[in-house]
Every structure is written in structure tokens, then in C-alpha cells.
Amino acid sequence: LGWRSALLALGFAATYKFSESFKDAVVLYFYRDIGFAKTDITVITKAVAYPAWALGGALGAVWVARYGLRKMLVVVGLAQALTHVCYLLVAFAGKDYAVLGTTIFVENTAYAMAAAAFFSAQMSFTSPAVSATQMALLTSFASVGQRVFGPLAGALQAAVGWKGFFVTTIALCLPGVVLAWFANAPRGSASASSSASPA
Image (cartoon, rainbow, N blue to C red; front, side, top):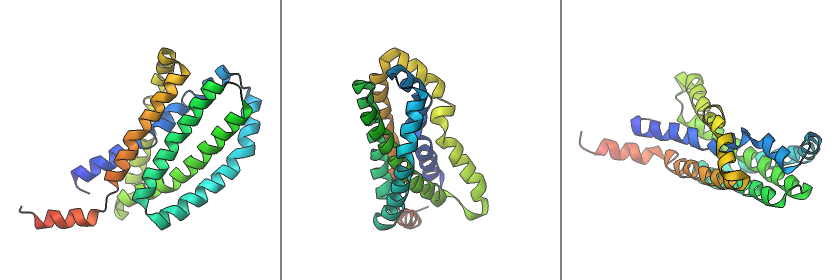
């Protein structure tokens, strides 16, 4: 890819799902603080998660094929930001089963769409001869939100509360959306311009 495109690819891999992973580090504590029991979460998730994943997976695959990977990565990235807006609404609404069910449905739909587009983007960055190694690297970068920065999520929530926390996670979605556009730009024109420029 060249060093610039490689850095963009790694930055995209690290930031596109950063907000999701960062939120997942403390989301169970959020449910408890709002007043939901484990059985509440289990029943609601079982009821809406499967149809949401089926819908999101189908939409993601069809829309990527129809509108192109680059555009859909931006659209799906914004859909992931909408998920955090829904969590912010849960923080305001309190123990409201309808709001929580809607949030979990939106979350799973958006994440299923993102999974299809994100995996396709990762594959487009790899070289066939070393694709397994490069996919492992990209996948490890995709989990830094929880595995590296996850311990900071609790400190952030303690400092700003749940509402401030989800406002922050909404903002954390934006770098990944921006990098999705630039990291997945068509490389044919860039290669052509590079070969045409003087050495």
C-alpha cells in the first residue's frame, strides 16, 4: 500500500470500532446502575438481537454491493454513532424497557451492517500471500478500544457520569468515519498519479 496508505489503514482499523469497544468495557455496569436486572437484559436481547442481526447483515451485504464499500462505511459508521445516541436516551429515560429494546435493536442492526462492511474493508487492505498475518494485525488493532483503553472507561464515567460518557462515545465515532473515507479511497488513481510524478 505504501507507508501513507498503510498508516491510514491501521488508523481506520483502530478507530472504526473504537467507540463500540470502549463502551462495551462498562455497558454491563450501565445496565445495573439504570436498574435493569440480568434477566431483563437477557430476555430483551434474545427477543430483538437475532432479527436485528439478520436485518443488518442483509442490508449491509446488499448496500455494499449496490452503493460501494467506501460510501457504506461512512453510512454504517454514522449508524454506529446513532447507537450511542440511543444509549444516551436510555441514560435520560431510566428503566424503560421500550427504550432499551429499541436501543439494543438499533445497536445490533448497526453492528451487523458494520461487520459486513468492516470485514470487506480489512480484506481489501491485505496482500494474498500474507493475508492471514495482516488480518490478524488489523483485527488486533480493531480491539484497542476495549483491550487497551477499556480500563479508562470506568474513570471517564466516574468523572462525567453516564450522560457525559455517551456524549463522549458519540464523538469517538467520528474519527473512524473520517478515516473510513480516506483509507478506502480508490487506489488506482493514486497509483497512476504517483507513477506520473517525477521520481
